[in-house]
Length: 350
Image (cartoon, rainbow, N blue to C red):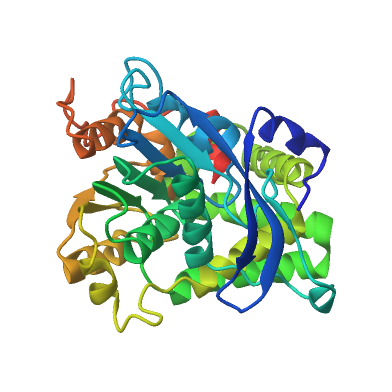
């Protein structure tokens, strides 16, 4: 899948792993699969210092899927000690590509989060990594993280899934249906509208009111905010990829073929934690707590006024959680109530 012109910067500098033929859960075999990825830091001789980070719905590995604020010298994932691997998930338009057989021409691509995890594992193996130090992701990336844990129980020493359910939710599917219907009605303007709707589910009414409440009668700054993000997505993402990833989210179910979510995740032989966000309008924290309790995983509540996107915005708290998962003593404790709230360029990467 190729992206629109403005997607070029989000594919720049990526490496490619040639995975060959790859059979999806649907039974379709993709040919000549090439997964795009970014690798920062040096992999140790034993391959045990790698952190695998999955991006969310429209994220790109170019900025490590939005995890850039946490990666680098002196940061929670210190590249003097760890290597960071960020792949472009199967179905996204930021560099991962493949060929389809003639019999599938014109039919929608059916990709699952399990397919995404399996393809990422091929990359991990190709790089000579026997076991990851940590695998993590938020939202869609959190779903892929959970699938990685269930599919490869010995694959990582630790895992964190931020703001992600383990099985389909009616609420999430309802929003995705609105996105899908908008795009099917008018692809370009529909994608922009889908993004506007999405931005409202990624944040909270409280934040929107504080940032955009009209200061003078007749002004509506929130309209400019939404239109900006809608148009920006149109210029950097494809409708085909957007629809493919929505379908993957709707089909996400760890229990499929495994009996139950508890059985699927209990097999994981590492330290697993879920992070829920009170006020998350898209995936309420109860969804995270449900699977964490079912399999005996750890659970953290991330207090924030930002809602779903808090997993990219609350850098102090998230940095502490990542450091603790890696067994690093945090410099500062988690700030349960952020001292300030400010716009972030990474908030657009959901």
